[in-house]
Image 1 (cartoon, helix red, strand yellow):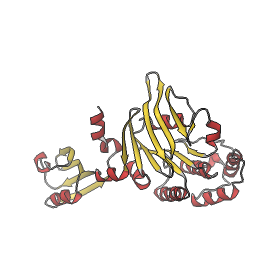
Image 2 (tube, rainbow, N blue to C red; image 1 turned 180 degrees about the vertical axis):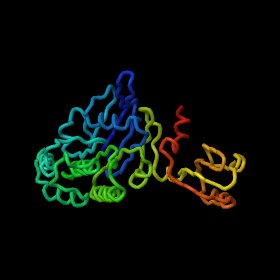
Image 3 (cartoon, rainbow, N blue to C red; image 1 turned 120 degrees about the horizontal axis):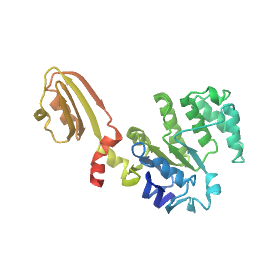
Image 4 (cartoon, rainbow, N blue to C red; image 1 turned 90 degrees about the horizontal axis):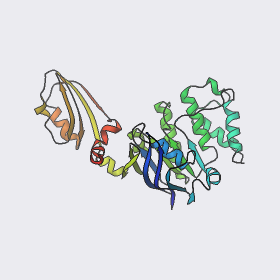
Length: 294
């Protein structure tokens, strides 16, 4: 069963970018990634899906029901965390969360305390006194307190430190084990890799690829930056799998796709003074998709 179905969903803002002809589905029990650079249209697609804004054309369903026609009914079973959260500053965290829980007509007191403990959230503080990261924690608890069947997260980890991010990922995995379906939107590929089964890649408002995470990992890229004692020329790095090669004096940078052992063997012959290996930006990783689309 598909929990989410988007069919040719389009939202026009005149000259400003929206989304165009976006179609994908999210299966029940799946953790589905929605990825693309900032400004690609992820938030617009999510807000249209949630009927927070209305589409120009196309359609979307959640639980098999039209997202606009049955919006109030559907929202009872959805937990949503927007990319930016805004609250009543003078309210205490606990009062805000109880107010949110009142919309679901169920006692969520125990659940709120459990989630606050996991996320290390002080329930007695005023919203105005919280850091950006702690406000994001409030949003996480608010989105999960009623144990929704569908969890929709838009850039949920911004403001969270690495330890708290891991606690959050563990929490999502537990919710998924209990049966929740999750739509996870992010511009950070490593986050999506940790959680998701499949991903949709969006660029400039258009869906350009639906991919399994296993396929992404097979095509994984790494970003290298090397500092050497000697100046090297481009010919030394004429190696299959290397793209975006830049050589400037004794600093070499490139993106490598392939068996990492082969490139490390090549580098072992160089006297290296420093070496950085990291995840490329999403734009860099999917450049081959983007070029193909162009």
